[in-house]
Length: 199
Image (tube, rainbow, N blue to C red; front, side, top):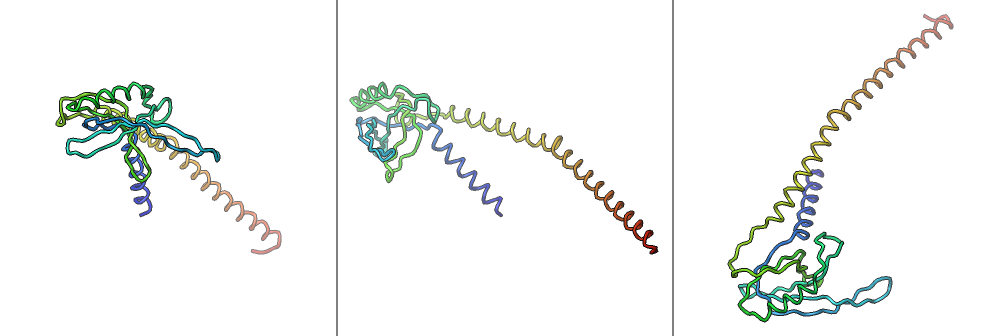
């Protein structure tokens, strides 16, 4: 039972990790851009940071806000260094009301924590009904699955051909040593009995 609970918990964590990290795309209209001042605390020191935001609207009228920050060399490894150019592109698209774009992003929108998905790329599309196939996600997940299967197979092969024979050999030696010890004890007891004149 514990193994099943642990396995389901690990699977759930992995799914959440990939859902947050892997990019997804929304078909929206950009309606404006903004800059939000955020306060950070580090070592009892209050720091200010400006975060670029991209405001957008879905086909059904729902609004969504993206942040526009460089990922640099950090995680996730998208190596984004063009947030300024992306902000200028978003400002230009905001002036064209009929333009529909695919906003590629990662992360979640959680209002309670003022969390916004981070924009990676903006691409003009034909309309709100445009269908985009997630090639990047499929390739990444396929590669990671193959790597996982290779590692799992290597571990099983190591266990079968090296670890199990080694453990079996140790067991045989311990069992043999146990028999030798039992024989030696009996021989010592018989010798003592002989010296004491007991049968």
